[in-house]
Image (cartoon, rainbow, N blue to C red; front, side, top):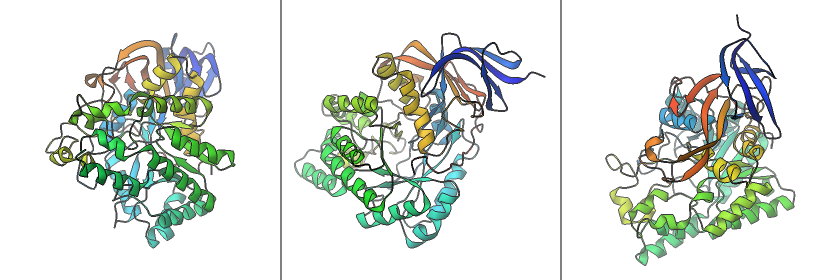
Length: 471
């Protein structure tokens, strides 16, 4: 009987801190040996000329999530995890959203039912707290944190999701007592509502004006307020999807004072700008790029790159929030309400499959960051921050054999026709990239090979998480 189930030979192994040429032996879904000249396996992969890296962990995705207006997300767990795998990811963390008036535990249970048997790669859930009732704060949330749901998200905007300052403080206090990590969508709700109403009165209703209403000023103010609340409650927080220099300055301000503030950014903030929201000529094509916070300008892109390089950002996630443009039965961005004003355009863009190729091409291939920094931002840091390390996020003996093989020289053009998500478009259509994942291996099973899905639906597992290393 062979000693290993799988041997990956002659690849250049990249971790968050090292690179070396080695063979990797896999047994029972885990990395069993790292050495040279290994023999004896059921399957052998020759990785000569390839980079061997930990599978990507996209710690901020939205699958099968209910919306207040009934708009249907374009990805469920089947299409979402399939697309993630094709993009070099082996674990994703979507959100179990608590709908107002409903039990948090029941919402988590229902979300598990949607995922069960449908995942190509591994998953774990954050929670979204939208209705912090005494029962939720006193019973359900503490119990769920103890059960391994050790992170949750709160919103400072959106009518159906936002918490008041008092509610934020109460939720933060629970996080402090239970050792949970809080993720914050930081945009000032009243400032956005005020600007949206003013723009509509002026007849400025095209998708482009979404970016004006969701100004960087509102993001900056909310970021500072969230940090202040976290300081008062003595907890760490993660500011998600940071879009530019203004909120970055608030995060840097906090860190200079010794506060534990983590930060995430996304592909849209290094690749898109507000001009994309103009569409072809201030027309509805711009709806394809509507997300919150919106893309900013070229100066903001430069600031984000500085933050990626200097450590301001801990994590690079996709914030994959997929909708169809040409909706079926008015379930996409292109629906009658959205045509009347940017306020009704579903917020979010697809990106789980293109996250890693964009960062690798724009970062590693163009010499902005090292491959080691790429691994830290996209796999190791998410694993550490969200309680999955050392099982996930590293190439080490005993870790899950979550491995992605990269061809750093492969050149591709991103097109909708080549992607695997449920959306009917990609905001990165026509983007030329250098570097592409050619094989995705989750717990020793090949899920994607040469952009073809070869793994079975249902092969992914749910991962219970420990406390964040940052708490």
